[in-house]
Length: 523
Image 1 (tube, rainbow, N blue to C red):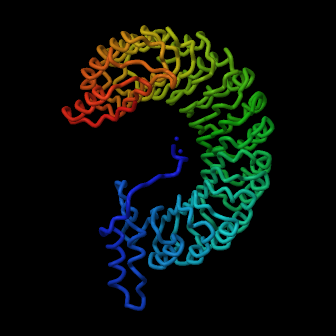
Image 2 (image 1 turned 60 degrees about the horizontal axis):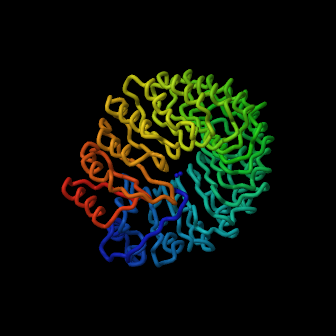
Image 3 (image 1 turned 90 degrees about the vertical axis):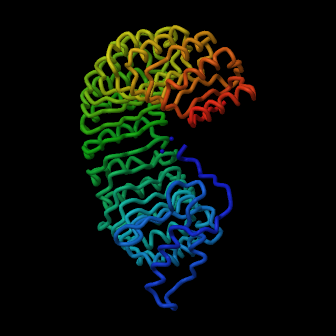
């Protein structure tokens, strides 16, 4: 998902070389008479291998073409060309037309040929500038795709207020498992319409309505209808305008979706919502990921969750980030995470943690033997206290990602990390973010790069400064260069806002050339 929401930007001209799709077309031509053949030239230009791609845009299987992805830079009309192609591929299973805005207003040309692709399982039309007419056309033809399992209509803003044109045509015979409607400007009426549709798409496993901030008022009915989708495993409602009342309604609905594995409620102002509803989480015993970051949670919310979360034995990831009013209550929750045997990821960045919470985390860490991700960024209480965490880790960890951004770290904090790495306890670490710690002096960075060792798997390191900071990297650059061979997996080194001269940039490039490395230095 990160990032992934932004549109692809491509450059360069269309190459005239033969694409993998040409071979497929030629095979079809050999089996058809002259009167059955359609113009090859347009299709050849449209289905091609991208200059920047590592894989082809068309792939074949035993029964012919299984997947088609259309290049957004093609000059021909996407819908017209696609319509010409579809009748030739009755075994087509995946069709991805995403990020082609010229499709908007002409989708009916494509949907009129849906009867030729009855095996289609995946249809992706995200960011295609679909109009109300397109949505209506899709609704009228969708019943022809009896094997459809995934539909993605994300980032089509005109879907808002018009969702009923699509949902009212869905049939009970559908095998739809995945429905994504991210950032579609959905309204409360759309939420109501979708709720009524759940009784038809009973096989639904993944529903993503994120980034529709006006849909919240219409979700009460949808929550009531969750009883119709007992196989639902993923529900994403990030930034959907949820309220405290919505959380109470959702809590009751969780009784009907015991298979739920991932629940995302982030970026909704639901302060106080869990005070009375947290107990309903006990009905989703399979829950693995619980994301409630930036939800304005209160100490009462955290106190209620503290009683329930330790009982969710399958929970692997808990994201509480950006809840700045949870105070000291989170300390007790952190302490009880030790009872989760499969726990892998904790996000408490920007939570205004107190030192007592860090002490409690230090005491809990030895019990979190499966922990892979730890994000403590933007908590100033960590300054001078990293040693408290390190001293409790006396064996190799599974940590892959550690983020300590903007924590006012000191030289002693860096020394604690060095000690842990040299002991071999961070051998699995892949990502280490120390960004925005302008409080670390130059000599401490010299020590860090001179002594750091044991990070054989580290692929991403970020030591960038705050945007308005500008410091010379001269005091430690030479030591960094001598350190890089000890980081054999490093691919990304973030050095934003450090002042680096042209000659110093050349030294970095020379290192890559001489050591046959391809480290991306960002500054």
